[in-house]
Length: 523
Image 1 (cartoon, rainbow, N blue to C red):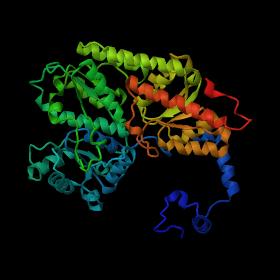
Image 2: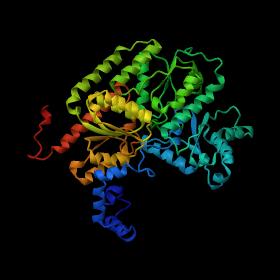
Image 3: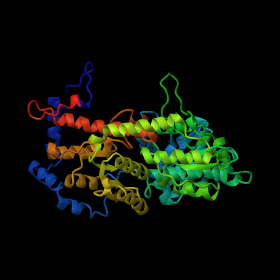
Image 4: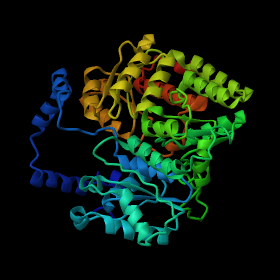
């Protein structure tokens, strides 16, 4: 073979070598029972038609690329946001390997998480002994100050009781009685990763506050609680901290994985770094109020904050774009009594200037987009502010109530009249939509690249380019450090969108004396 010790090639361009091309061709011909290429081409063309789209949208018993992940993934991210906390998944080893791999590929960082390795015997008899041994080993080996437990499908199907298992582990001396082990049941077969984050946060908040509310007084610490929800843009943690600091507002960011997911390469491995402290969590009920940055995904958290902490949760949307960042800052100012500083007013003005500079290129551009409920809603709102037209809006884990709210936003703008919102649909549905009603661009995670490739396969004129904003981003580096919230986030999104449009313009006008009449450099 052409792979040699002194000339190591990656899979691309290695598999373009003739011997590999020959080997792969023989594998296809001899073992894959491949259909004739003419039939494959015929079926492909049919899957791009209106007729196929109608059949596609009648699917009930099959999901193809669902545009969501499972609950324990979100629970792990939530736990990573607390100081010296080890996420612990009660389930099989393979599940945890999947969660760690998912985050490794997105954040380009090592992600600590353990499981109690349930196997066939535990699936039959229950995982009590796995829990006892697992908690003991986790504490002894990794020395966390807290272990946050969630579950996978196996544990939920057989009905394992985390509360009983953890209490039994303490009673029998596997871990000290006072050692903090908050938990959440996070069955993978319902909800999604955002539900898992919400469940885990509610479990941690309940553990540290429910039984100690007698001496709590709302507003006594003069701070504001910020609950981020399932958030994978580390820049968003930084921009929220910066804006609150510039306003002089004291705050507690409840679940803050910014440091542990962005540690420096300085020769020292940090299994734990930063994060919300246990003392901050215990003190949270004493805050002035609690702001939910992604309220559509934090239903259980909101119920606890309002019912147990007695906080009046402000009615806000995710602070994306111009209007909703304005609303966020004005509400923070109202609650805290601190004025919005000139630095943020100037930053807002720069965003407005950028919107004015770029409106001629953004106006009327048509977008398909997908992602989690709050992110998609914020993106729709900002696209409308820019004069763009979101035409296909897909949110697999959105509710009917969420859809109604997005429809109201679209109806309030002249740019939303051609939009359709889809909940519970997957990326194979979206594929049909972009073939039968072509947008100019798609906005979403890395999995959209396969839709782009399919549209290009039909012909260059059918191609729908992908703009990577969302989670997960596996095939590009360092986008997770960017920002989507606040004025700064709006500037970054705007820059990404308009330059994607201009890059596409360059691509379409490269033909010498054929399409190169735009003279864009003089504008």
